[in-house]
Length: 177
Image (cartoon, rainbow, N blue to C red; front, side, top):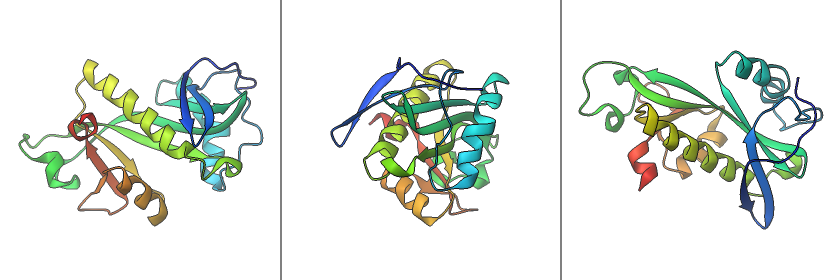
């Protein structure tokens, strides 16, 4: 289980606060992380490390000093063409569309409103674009928890699925532009 941290990742500047983002590791201390949503807290504290060790997801933590102040989790996935916005499925055979899923993103309460959520999203986008160079990925998807989260992702160019307005997608070519 993760415990303590030593900062060794990329850095991001959020409203004059400097944070680093690195892969979740055993030394990270997750005790006391509280984003205000119990399901996200529970995922980070109980499941993120287990899932990562099982190679079913990869979690990255945002650090301020040695304190975990946010995280995002990436998994690979696919979507059926009829569940994706037309722009995502246009021009493809009727097969599942490969994508990266931003499975979780959260910022602890004390640091909400400092721009860390946007920094974590930009980090997830950067990592997705890098992965797409190895194994082609057409889009980045997110399953927003509520309308507030949907609005956050829409601000960054994500568009809703025709089957569920809380399932959002953005083409990687749009992220590269």
